[in-house]
Image 1 (tube, rainbow over the protein chains, first blue to last red):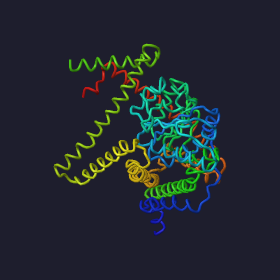
Image 2 (tube, each protein chain N blue to C red):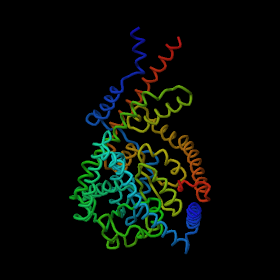
Image 3 (cartoon, each protein chain N blue to C red):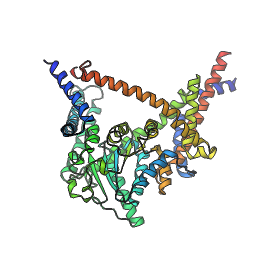
Image 4 (cartoon, each protein chain N blue to C red):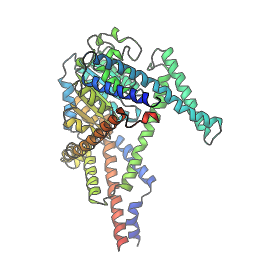
Length: 283
Length: 210
């Protein structure tokens, strides 16, 4: 009788126990678990190759379309790509479709620029090698208007300084002057970038999306409208592996590995409880 | 006239934007760019409406001492404090993102941790929901369950350590069946969106008059 009760109880585990298990599955691997082998998948390799194909001096536009809710997933992608871009001597133009995301983008820019200077002796100068144009409202109109003349909406940078005073902007007017756009998003802005910037103006785009948004973008990737796709923390870890700068993505893999395993075990236990209860109820 | 003029404005603007999208040459290109700049400015003003929608009910809660009015007071305090911090950064430090400005302090030590905490709670609820609701009740549900397990294993290094083919299977599920289903859904959504846009332009649907 006790065994039957125990088996039936498999489907009725208190949610507080589940919360505790999730907490432990995230926390413990951060300190004791090894990352394991990270094998970059094809969409991530395509994104890396798209950046790698750019020539020194080419412009990489980065759109920060996320805020703090998705920072753990998207910040590692941003920093890995900035490392790659600056090491290749690309020019970086940052903007964003979320007002609360721009500070995060600027913090990552500053961090990567400082790291490159301290660890590799590579000096990057604001206004010459990179610039942050800030945020403008009305995102569809912003994406479309850049196609004609970026200055129609961005007369000044995020510090309200006129962009014409910066050497980096001398030859940048519209998408014809941009080699690649990197969209880091946790929402539907990637649809708009693909539909207007790529669809109408033909500019190449790679996307770094949260794990929950990435499946939506496979449609564009398969159609060739996206030149690469980095999905979730796993994608960030894969990109870091390609660039050779392990960061937040790689560090997060043990916790993500064990939390995935925990959820799978919980699903199996839940189903076992469900079928046992159903079997015993039918008897 | 109160109905006809807005419908006429919608019709002309709708057709104008469609034409300028497909004919980017003079004079349509310039006109479209002008319209896009206007749109961006109008979007900025929408923030004022948003502030009104946010604050008005909370002021009413405080004035009428409704249950939980203290939370409304806290919201207005937070709003005012953030506004002051933003003004200080913009006017004194000349940039909202200035590292030594008040706004960046509010942003880094209040907004970012709050947003991060709220979102991180999802992990707990997803695990609990998966345990309770992910049941192999039907063949379709079983297919979804098996696919989810394979994708979860294929996405993380531990999956590859268990079996080296998990990442390949995950990649195939994402690139082929998942994309096929998603494409069908998206075609449906955008056909619906085009039909709705056409109905609004032609004045068959008039949500802006309500």
